[in-house]
Length: 572
Image 1 (tube, helix red, strand yellow):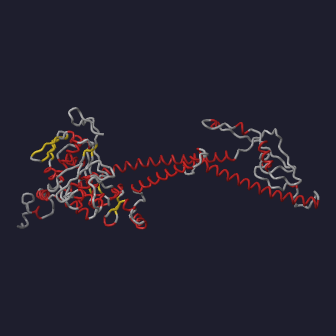
Image 2: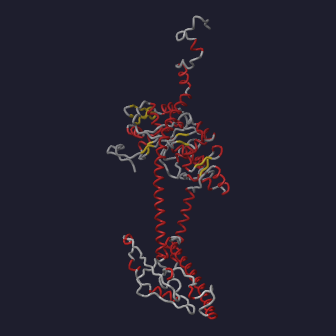
C-alpha cells in the first residue's frame, strides 16, 4: 500500500505507514578468511559492518520527514534536522565517518541491471545460477538454488549495504549485481550508493526507510540528545552462526556454511553424518515442503477421480470416512467394545462346557449310587456348579450368564442406580425410564440362542413382576471410563500449559535483561576498538596522560611536581 500523499504531491508523513529497516552488523569471528577478504577489499570491515548500535525509529523517521535533497557539482547532498540538530550528509562526509572509499562503481539502478564496460547481467546470472549459455535478461534466481556463500552475500547486500524489505524467494537484480561485485572484488562506491538509496526510498512508494542503525549511530556522533528516546536494541541484528541458523544456514568445519537445500541434494549417508556432527535439525527445506504440497495436491486429485469412478450407491458417511483416511475415534471405541463382547461370549461358553461336564458326572453318580453316594463325589444337591459371571447367583438378572438349576438360591439385589442430574443437561439423554424396564425381552433372546440345558437340570425363572433394576450395560460403563480418562488428561494438559506459560514469561524477562546488557557492553567494546584503531587519538591520549605510571622515573624527574631530596644526589 503506497504512502498517502497530499494535494501538493508530497508524502503525508503524519498519516503514512512506514517502517525502519535497521540493517545488520557482522561478527568477523564467525566467518572464513575468504568471506572476510571480500569484505576487507571493499573497506566494509573498517567500521561500516562493525557498528552495533541501538536504533531510534522515531528519530530516523524524523530524519526522513525533514530530508531535503540538493545537488552541487553533480554531488548529492542531504540536509535534514533531528531534534533541532542540523544533519548534513554527502558522500565525502559518509566516507569520512564510516571509513569508506570513494572509488568504484557508483551507478545506482533499483529496477534495472547495473552494467559496466567489463561486466553485465549475463555475468551476474552466470555466477548465481552456474555457467549457463543463453540466459535471458528477465531471469531471476531463487534462494533454494543458491549456495550458502551466495545466500550470505545476498543477505549482506539486502540487509546491510542497500537495505530493503524484500522477503521474496526471488533474488532481485540489485542483490545479484552487488553479490557478484563482492565475490569477484569489483570496487563500488558505497557512500554515493547510500545517498542515492536513501533518496530513492524517500521519494518512492516503498514503506521501508533504510540504514536505521547507521543513522542512529550518526545522530549520536552529531550530538543529538537520545535521552528518553525509545530505543530498539540490536538483538539478532548481527550476522553470526547462531542467527544464520534461523535462516536455515548452518556452520560446519573451517567456518564454512551449508544450507538446508544443499543438504537435501546430498547423499543420505553423508547428509545424516553432517546433521549428527553439527547438530543440524532434521528440518525440511522450503523447496521440499513445496514439492510435498504438490504431491499431496496430486494425490487429492487422484482420490477425487476415484470418487467419480466409484458406484453411486455408496453413502455419504462412508465416503467421508474413506476420504479422511479411515480414521474415526468412534470406530476405535466400537472395536474395543466388540472385542470385549466376544471375549465375554467365549468365557460364558467355557463355563457352560464345564458345567455340562459336572452334570454328566452327577448323572453317572445318581445312576450308580443313587442320591446317597460316597462323600466328596459331586452331586446336584451340593451346588458344585461353577457360576457364570453375571448369573442370578451373583446378583445378575435372569437370562444373563447360565440358567438357574434346581434349588439354586436367588440372591436379590436391593441396590438401585443413582441418577446424576448432569446427565439431563445439554445433549445428554435422560434414560432413567429404560433402566427400570423389564428384562424379559433380553431373557427371551438369550433363552432362544442359548444351547439346551443338560438332562435333570431344570431352570427356574424370576417372577416377571420383579422390580429389580438390571446392571449397567457394558457400553455405558466403557464410555463413562473413557470420558473420565479424557477429562483427567485435559486437566493435566491445562495445568502443564499454565506452568509453561509462567516459565516462558520469566525467561523472556531474563532474556530482555541480558540483551540490554549485551548491547551496552558491545557498544562500549566498539568504542574502545575504534579508539585503539585511530593512531591520532592514541597519540593524543598518550601525550595528555602524563601520570600513566605513578612509580616511573618520569614522575620523579619532574622538579615541579616532586623535587628531589636535598640529602640525596640527583641523577641527570
